Length: 340
Image (cartoon, rainbow, N blue to C red; front, side, top):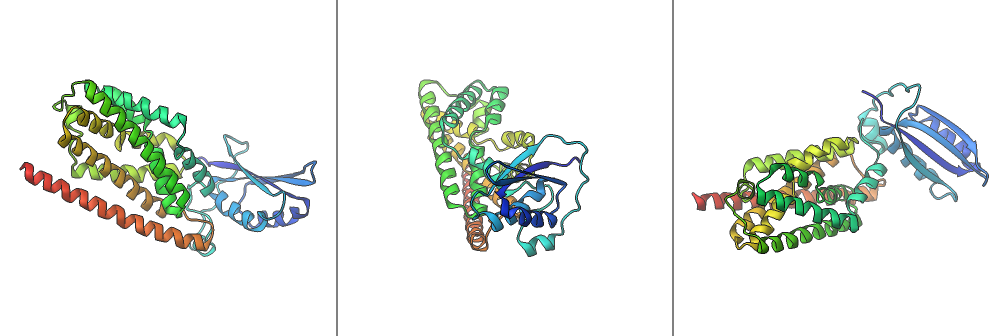
């Protein structure tokens, strides 16, 4: 398996050069080199495997962050020659003892945090993406066209803020949680408003397969949403964005949301409620599986006091999602019983 490499640039005052070198001596790195800068600082560049960056950056941050002029920059490496040898797998007990680093293959906390922040942004691009994806979903539903629907699923504007919500919960990061909830609410509101207006303007046939199939929630939907949520979090933490396409299709949030708006605008509130239940089930399962998977991937804050807050946030979120999922399944069984 080819290595995923990173280049860590360490800018530090000249008097810290030897201290930085001592830290690097104890780290698992492939190569390092140093040069002096014109402003009296030094630049040390370190080539290392991606899953070694978190432990090293945490150590450097603790030692030198308060020093004036200190800076860390992390860059991806496309290729290098010769290819460095694969480092030994770190012992799990040692990682737990030091409280640093993550399991083999996982990207660093800083890289993951930078990625989820992009998905939690409520900006013009996000708003336009929600609108464009809603148009695709509405056309695909009304025309019963699975190809167009897959297009709306792949765009998946609501997946990013939900992954950010799970990640923020795992870290106990309240600002990120609030930001993710705000972005999700904005996307949901836009999609519902747009689809209700379309439903009022068009005649929506609830017997169409694409529409009717998204008005019911079954046990299979719960299983798929849980599996897709876990797979999404796992592929995200290991830096495999191409695998997220399958997750986007499997746990699509926008088509059932647009479906609910179309039905509501066309005067089918009961069926619209079924679609909203499907959306809520997918959201709950996605976040429940995401939080559990992120925790199993040893995503944790830097300090012990933040770790305590993160554990409380994970425990609260787990039971909240579990209760919501149980309530949804109970309501689903009641509806099935009434239909029977």
